[in-house]
Amino acid sequence: MPSKIELWAKPIKLVGVPNLHKVSDDLYRSAQPTKTGMKNLKDLGIETIINLRSFHSDRDEIGLTGLAYEHIYMKAWHPECEDIIRFLEVVMNTRRTPCLVHCMHGADRTGIMCAIYRIIAYGWSKSDAIQEMIGGGFSFHTIFNHLADYVKELDIDSVRNFMSGSKCTSS
Image 1 (cartoon, rainbow, N blue to C red):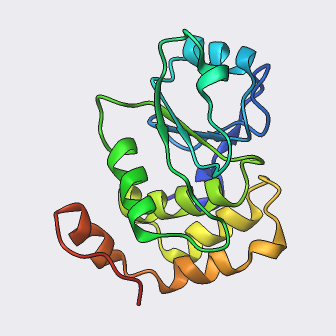
Image 2: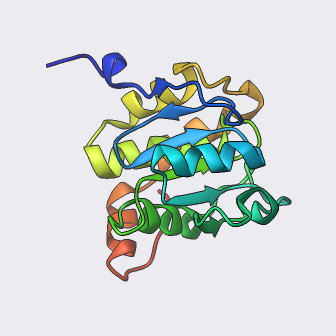
Image 3: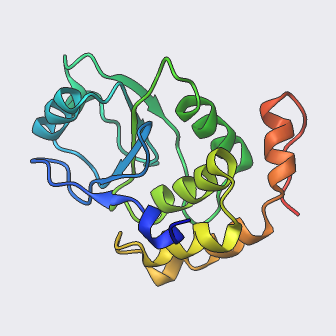
């Protein structure tokens, strides 16, 4: 069995899409794409853009590309369980994939969402997911180390139950 490091997201060069990595066949991650980047993402086969930025819409960048769009107004200093559920519902809906998730830098908010995705969708341990989040080459900012603590404390069963209609909590 390969080590988790071999399964970490792979960098991809695509004009207009900084810090782009392929997490899985259904999920890519990046920093803020440009208008050219959005067109190139559509050409790559991306179906849905998930924007985690609080104060920026992608409407101008997406334009008439035909990309579907989800805007989750996420705060890096305080993740909300509802934001995580909404993200997971989009990326685990095969009619909406492949998706690209991004924030401004593609490091912190994007990182926590991808870590939780690894745990829920692929059964990764919290430790393995956090290792990729911090050390995967995405330029994770240490000012947001509390995001790793959030993942450690997150009640994964509660997230799964919430996706089935129950209440979501962290432990």
